[in-house]
Length: 531
Image (tube, rainbow, N blue to C red; front, side):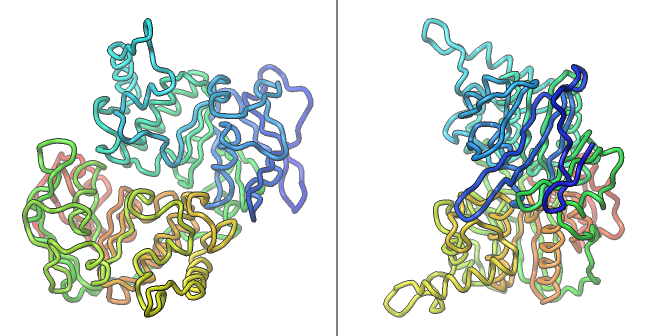
């Protein structure tokens, strides 16, 4: 049952006694959490039934991750109570949460980059005998668990050398290794391929069938409709309602989330390609993980007025291809030309000043300085321009703040203290919107966008897609790299499929099917005539 609460919100009717069959595994009752300048959670109640998959949905900055961080002991709420199996509990830190059987896969991974995958999985619960670390049996257990749940990893690889998708699998295995009963997945599919997402959805169903209770934060309505039993919606830190997935639709969920109707299709006219902006010829890029080259003899072009999308299963060379184009990695061989200039060995700043913008795959490693303010991050690549620095090399703080505030307003970047907010304290989705605002506002000749809508809600995705198409229509060249097949099919004008470091096919999204793309992405088919 539900009742109308303050501000027109729907509040669950709580009863003092719950039958054994209906008893909740976790109840978060009237939780309020404040930060400077913002109420992240405002009197939120969430109830998780035993053995259910409960989705938590909301816009970027709605308070979802904060609420789950309260449950996991990372934050202490100012008001409210947490109960487990009907009994009040106190969770002061993650150790308390783990002791209570609560595990969490974080949106921004909590991994030690100089440790191996195995060391990260067992960190904090290391098996010892007479004071000596026992890793052989643990290694076998982790490999068996990875095989069972379809989360294959290399236990001996360093975290710093593996893909974002592999890091995600490590986080999930770290939680499963501890045999927790309450599992929190914070945007677990943001960096997974479509095939990996399907596998994870089945893993979640199997875990729920084993009696685990799952809280699943996601912006992806298709996933919520496919796997969740119930869904709680938050908006701007407030509780909107809880619905049974069997009795709702994607359109209704999106309205609850953003307060308006959302277009799921991308409106765009036919592309009118012009002159070549990016010309990559026979590029080869080495791999950090093994002797085999990550990108092998790749050639392609991107023209003005078109969006060319690199599609493929994660780990097939897309990241290294982007690193080579943007200058984050040196190329072993080949030639890269932008606007007629050879940029193969050009420093990153010169590429940026010369007309290249880059929305990176890893926003923390390559997109932001987390302990800088939002306004400083907005001018990271332009602070030296006369607009932001005077003749004596002193920053024009007033102009920087005015510029940042304009972008914050235009792209709806939500933060507790506006332009002066430390980026580390912002939600992942709003960090992503800040990067997109900065890179698009540079008015580049070439926009390299890697997973640009990762972690964004449907309203933000709709807006970002409009901005990318607007760049194309303004005569810019766009190189899009995406693991989201819906994004690949709806946004791109040409699709290049990568498999094992090579481009194995080129397609028109208007004529190719998702099934056909999947065969090429999986390596089952190769060799399409290149246009």
